[in-house]
Length: 129
Image 1 (tube, rainbow, N blue to C red):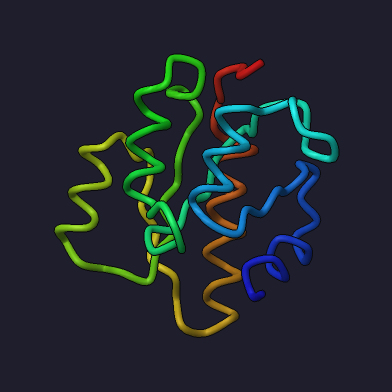
Image 2 (cartoon, rainbow, N blue to C red):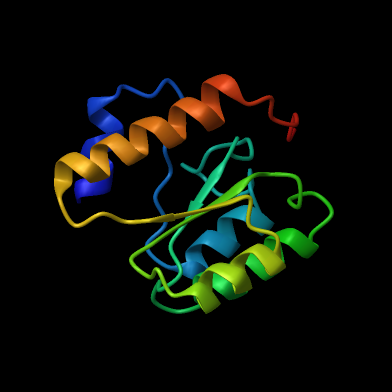
């Protein structure tokens, strides 16, 4: 997957957990630390696709922002959609940022680099655990 290659290329120090769908993401986030092999801490940030299989990104975002333990984790929407309605809906649900996925790999890599540099290096994040 292009996104995973971009993360590896920039050698993020933070572990990256990839969920296959919205249901798996919610399963992890709502029950973190309880499954063997899954990280024992909450993520510093969440990169969320809108159009995931199963529970879609909007529904996942809504659950995250309503949960008292998860609501302060920054959620970055990363989607192919540049539809203004999608963008507005996500911000109304509590998204902290909305990025559109570029088609070309080099542009995708640069967008990931800039976003991670901001969220993991420049920004002060709440202590989740």
